[in-house]
Image 1 (tube, rainbow, N blue to C red):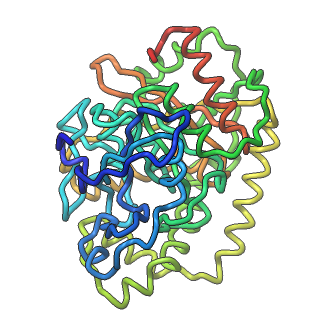
Image 2 (image 1 turned 90 degrees about the vertical axis):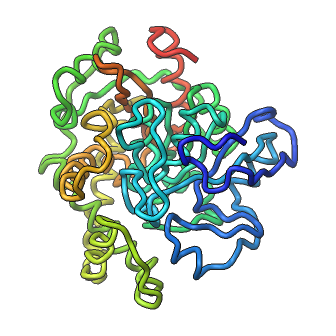
Length: 391
């Protein structure tokens, strides 16, 4: 296996297919947070590696992919304990974004995105809690998918925040994205994927600059749309709600280990974990009640034939080695976009475009719960009809 841009933690760790199916002949890489028999995960942090033993079995997702003909080519880098959207790792380095090497790849599924975008594998598996598949997909110029929350089995995956954690996948090829989805997602979807109502979230579109906005919206100029504002109190309030629920659950998941082992975290990550330790878990039920109201509201809007269209990220990938304070400011803006699917548990697919300088930008589509396969199929048909993106 070629070692490219530090995408892989272990590039010669190969698992052969255990069966035959729709993924025959396809290769994949997997984020270093999935349990693999006799393999020790790093979760992006040396102290995690040294304080945890090897896996006892393969994660359910890995078993499903192997049984359907795919070949595992290696494990990929991640941000520390998956708690970032940047892809820069203080301990293990930053995987090189193959589309724009002077910019970050996005995280926390950074290595998986780079492996897919580099063509080292046909598809790559990551996790998405706050945007960790969608954002690196956008930054690296590939297709990425976050499924309905709870739709894909999370057994054998190191947790971050249980209310938001999902398995996600990325590829240069939307047909491959669909094939992986049909393997990992149970077959209980609405078969009709002729979505008839397309909604543009006005506040979300104000978060992206006019030039990039024009490029993305031009790709949909022939599709009738309706402008909506889904957050009466503003997406910034939704992002804060997401942040507090996530932070509380993160400390519940990892606080005991952090207090016991006193791990060393890199800049930005350390401060974020410290903040989670200050949150009051007794406030969580009231926050979840607000989340459920938002979930019901957006689900009622979309029904079975509606799609919400938003930019995946506010801009192209930030430059490498920016001060952590500057990246945190950008993160707050970014979370106003990623929290929509996160809070509601809705499926979201991001597709690649380029700005005037040839740098990747992403366009996203969000459908109602359990419309995952229908969503990917609709996007694929729309893209092929308009010939905006190749297979």
